[in-house]
Image (cartoon, rainbow, N blue to C red; front, side, top):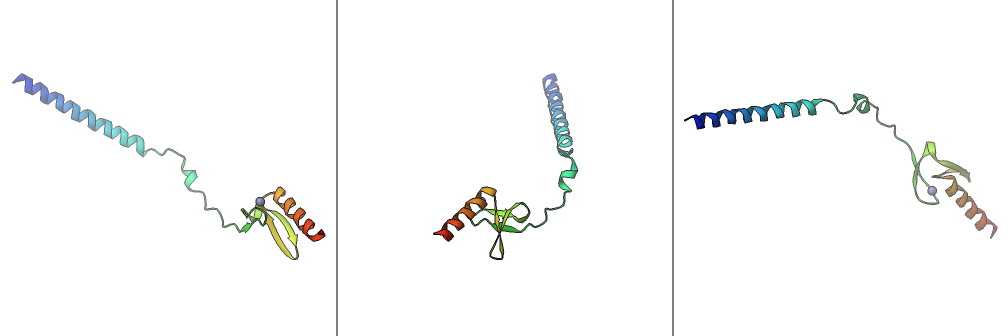
Length: 95
Ligand SMILES: [Zn+2]
């Protein structure tokens, strides 16, 4: 019955190897992949969004290109949109 004894011994080694691999995998996955500072950032404060009247894009107030018109402030996503809007206003006013 030496054959069965050897088979049993091999089986035990396989079980031990699988257990070892699982332990190593668990140890590796437990280590943080990124520094914890990434998750401790405070949530971004709510920014007021304004709709660009030229192209329809919503743009945050602090990065918008502004235009004061008839007492209200318009917000544009880019200088190009602002200039095109002004050009159209002048065109329609002069016509
Ligand atoms: Zn725009």
